[in-house]
Image 1 (cartoon, rainbow, N blue to C red):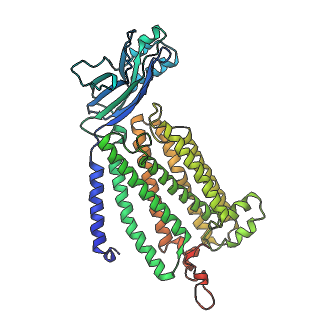
Image 2: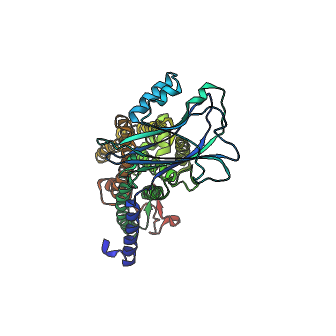
Image 3: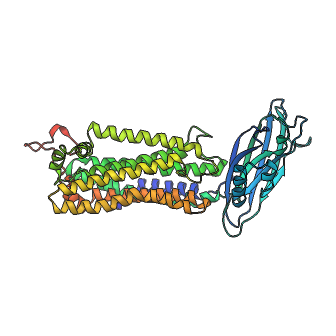
Length: 481
């Protein structure tokens, strides 16, 4: 079928592939974090950020601090302002000591590396709009056997000695992972996104060919193909957004996140993938309750008298109706809210991937709940079906669907046993790969002469809405059952 693709389309695809390849292999300069620190006699320490360094790769950190206006942090009172770094082993000891209520000096002694922050010298660069300027640079020691996180903390232990409220400090810190590489927890992600995006693009050519072939044969497109087509577009756009976010990260060390820009493609990637996953979940549940399957059509009418199951069959057996749309929209609304809430944990020192927090675990619980609805549907339809072929297909669909519903929650749970510096890449790569593979598998099943095609209403497209004279009733081009 590739012979029918115009040459100009092939040239365009080659250009896009080269552009994406450049984006995928371009190394990152650094991670940049910025914010405001307010220390006092009550809060003598302030957590700044964490960063992962690859093994056998020296790290580098550069910091710049300043006070605004005419205010000065060093106000004539006693100060001992330090910037401290804790590796992942020392951080555990620091956190335990903090929970026990130890003194600031005791916790600072646990740091892997510490430097005192002093006002800039007269010959150093100084902004006249700043009260004081501070600078530091440090090379982080290499770990030979594994990657590791460093946790940055600003502290002034002398503030415990009196009622202190010094001027707030604005900071901007750059973390470099060796010679301009992404952080260790992002290692390999650009290439994974690139490879999957190329695979989806190639499948898109096949998908377009099969859809056009089906349209020529039947004059109709089925709603199930349209829905999965939307899921395919959302997933492809999600990976493109993530790849561009990583590309931007490589240029400025910030990326496209809400804390840096309104064009938050990192969040858009998460949102689009969530929409794609929800569409697949919704369609699988509808299929479980008999949608598109020819034999259990009477099941929906009979199930109406069976209470809750009848209500579910009525909703999911007719996905083109308003009731099904409202259910889908309600779940999507809750999912988006949870994804937004999860963004507040992006740089929390206890979180290492996008689902390692309460909103993320709630999203995983929702997916398990949807799996239960899927099971209820398949079991009900199998019991009510008199067609052995339909029952056999639903049995196999139960296994395949269950695997898809639970694979990602199981992956998220299992990453809790992995080292922190591996969790983000495993979860993100796993989500992208599993979702993309499932999309291609289901779309091919719907568009090819598969077992499902033979027992479903897709095999009768072109006749579903014909009048006695052979014309299309109401000119209907979308088959919905």
